Image 1 (cartoon, one colour):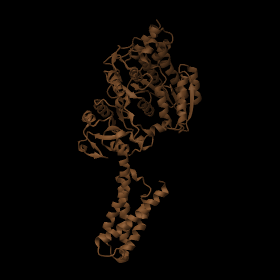
Image 2 (cartoon, rainbow, N blue to C red):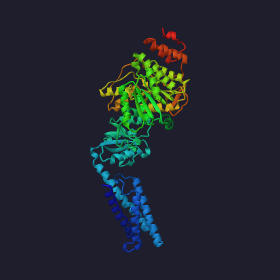
Image 3 (cartoon, rainbow, N blue to C red):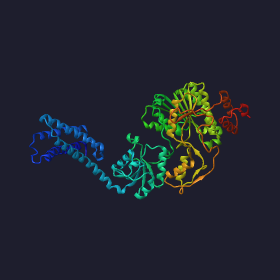
Image 4 (cartoon, rainbow, N blue to C red):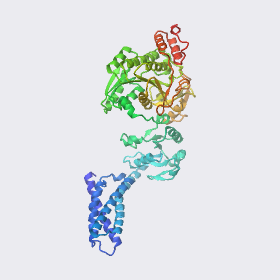
Length: 609
C-alpha cells in the first residue's frame, strides 16, 4: 500500500470512528433521545472530526508502520485523542457555557479503544503470520532479558523472512523470572541453560548482553557450552542503531569475545589535536598492527597518511582497502622501503616531514629470530635507530615505537632487540625536541604471528592442536585494542616513556586452544591437544615490567608508565657500533646480556673478541 492510499484509508477509517464515538457516547447516556437532535453534540462531532485530522497529521497517525507498533505508538494515540477531545470541550464551553463532561469522557475512551484497536489489529495480524511459520524455524534460547534481549525477540518475531524463533529467555535477574516478553517466557537463569535446551528442544543459543563485561561473557559462555549446541551473539546496539547491521545479523562467538578486555575509552579531543589535518607516517603499515593503526588514524582525517612497508603485496592490500572506503579526504601515500636502508628512510622523512610517526615495522617471531639473530638486530635495532634518528633530525613532533612484553627480561633475541630498540628511543628522547615513547603489547589475537590462526587451521584439519607446554601463559589483547593504545600513548608522551597496558590476568595457551575447539563446534574428545615442548627462546611466563621498572600510577585508565632503565649515550653508541662487526653467536649472546641490564661488565673490546 503506497503512502497516498494509506493516508486516505486511515483518514476515512478515523472519520467513521470519531463520529461513531461521539454519537455512541451520547446515546449511552441518553438512550431515549434522538442522537441527531442535539445541536451541540453535532457541533462537537464536527469539531472532533476537524481537530482529530489536524492532530493525527501532527502526530503522524496516518504514516506509521503499525504492523510493528509498540507501547510508544499507543501513547502517541492517547496524546492525539486527548488534545482532540479537549478542543471539543472548549468549543462546548464557548457555545453553551457548559461542558458535557460524561459524554466527552466516554468519547475519549472510545476514541482510544477504537483507533488504537484498529492500528494494533495490523500488529496482531503480522505476529500471527510469523507464528504460523514458526514450525520451520530454528528454536533459539535468548540469554539476557534486558533491553537488548527484548529488542532481539521482537525483531525475530517481526522479521518478514525469519530464520529463528525465540522459545525462551534466561536471565540471572531474579525479578524477571517467569515473566513473559513478546510471548517468550523467562524460564530460568544461566545455570539452567542445559536443562532448558534439552526440555524445549532448543537448536541455538543467542547471547544478548552487550553491556556485560568480558569476564561476565566468558562465564556465561562457559555455562552455555555445556548444552553442546551452537552459541551465537547478537550485534552491538551501536552498530544496529547506526544501520551498519540488522538486529537479526547474528554471528559466531569469537575468541576475542572471550579473551579481550573491556574497551579503553579514548581521549578523542587529544587524539584529534595530534592527527587531524596532520601528516602521519606508519612503518610496517602492511602488518597486522600497522594496518590497524592506519585504519584507526584515518578516522581522525589526517591530511596525509604515509603507508611505509617492505612487503609490496601487503602495502598494496592496505592501500586498496583504505582507498575503497571512500569516506575520507586524506591523501594516502604507499611507500615501499626497508627501515634498514638508512639513506632511503632519511629521504622519505625529509620529503614528507610527518607530524607523527608510528613505528610498527619489526621482526616479531621468537623461534625464527633465534635462528636469524643478525636479521633481528638489523631490522629491530638498526631499523629503529634509522627511523628515530630521522625523526629527531627532521623535527617530527611525536614518535611512538611499537614494543612488546617480550622485551622484559628477554631470554630470546627478538625480545632483546626490542628492548634495545626501547633504549634507543629513550636515549634520543633525552636531547631531542621530538616526543619519543614506546608502547608494550602482549600477544595480539588474530595477527599473523598469533597462535589463533595456527590453532584454527589445525582444528579445520581435524587436529591435533599442538601446544608447547600445559603451563605456558601469555597476555592477550585484540588488534583494535592495541592500536587504540598506540594512538592514546602518542598524546600522553612527554619524552622517553615506556607505556604499558593494564592487561588483566594472563591466559594459559591450553585454555585458548580449548576455547577455540569449543567455538569451532567440537569437543576435546573429537579434537585432541598435544604438547610438543618449549621452542627455542620461549619463556614459560611473560612479564609486563621487571622488578627494576617501578610502575608509576596510571596516567590514563588502564595505561601506566614503566620506569625502564637505559644505558648511557656513549655506552649505547659503542655497543651499537660493535654490533655491526661481531659474529652471529656473539651477537645473540650480547644483545640478550645488554637487554637484561648487564652493562657493568660490558666493554667494546670484550664484544669484539
